[in-house]
Length: 304
Length: 270
Image (cartoon, one colour):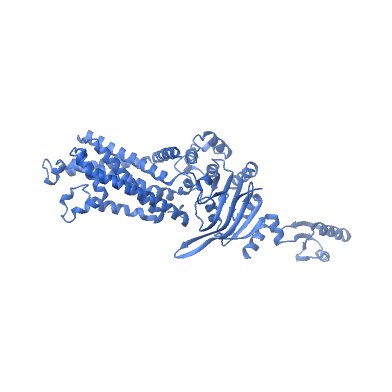
């Protein structure tokens, strides 16, 4: 896969009341074509600044950013043609006193799409906005405004999408529809998805980067990062005689009838459990493997 | 590229008309307000009856006419100026500036579109005042073709000045609040409601340093005393020079303002 977004040694500081605050600190990151990259981090970690620098809305102080070979500072217009952005308070990015269709037409023409009717029809169908397209946006629900903002970002059918907290404030149905759309229809697109909702990141992204205080503290696939922090998995057992499982390495009783076993080899440990159960006729009420969550990786990364 | 930008100006103007039509009450109130302003001027001017104040003799002597030309010209110029200077402020306040700047649209296109919309609103205002003035009070304004020339040059000047304020808005967010102050001070010295000859002698030369003076005086000469081109040549020359200066300053300030806002990350708030 080719690299499509390249961030090299990028630093961004903001001046507040005479003091400089570092939002992004010497960031190096590369995103490959057709990849869904998740950018996670606590509030104020610098995620939005990164998205806005990529979107050409903020100029970095140091370093360079290129998208598909174009420099974000010098070749902003070339980048805007291949970019779809959903950033900031995007329900405010709409004209509430225009209808949904008027908004779509307006932004389509600003994107140099002079005959956008077919594309608008497609997008209003895709986002289920057809019935509402001739109503003023001020009458839309928050979910509908989200969908409209998303439709605007897709007007030019961009190969690269930058999504900053795209599902925040979205109801579960809209959230499900947007995720389904991205999974099924956007396989050819490169997506950077910034969020602090780790569940959606884990669900949607093939690779993640963890930003903390503007620095990239972790980077890799979700599975690789989990393995990096937890080389073991846990098996949880709820049984009538927990003490007989203490002969297994890594086992400890963590509650009434509850045993937890840390293991590097889940299959072998399960086999031992089965043997013990057969030999001792133990009643198993519940057995499950517990994998480390992205949340645990996140906390470990932030504390690092 | 250039053609696309011209087409986009049309797209912005269409958007503004759509938005304006959703504010029907405010729109109607604005025009009613104009009609009452006209009535106010006419009653005010009628106090002089048939007497002709000597200070008005260089302008034909009719105070109602003097007030009308002054207020129409001044109103038009500041409608343009306010539309231009408020362009980026409005987009920032609505939160739409970032989404517009994510498209391949020049910042000057946004500003010019607002200016043209302002011009159209200004012309609509003038038309309403003239129609109401003619049918209710029998007032007619007959000038020469050079009035349009003065009007055009003044519009360009105000657009340049509006760009300066538009650019400064990106820099110093609430700079727009100073505009009414500038407007009131300038009005005092520019002979909008009274000839500058009634000011103390020491204050009269100040007018020459205020750009709007050349617009108002140029309009009076072409609309009130039907001056020839040679008689208004001086005003036209100064207006052309002011146009070049303000457009240059305006483009420069806008460019600098955008870069500053992009460095500060402040495009999305006002």
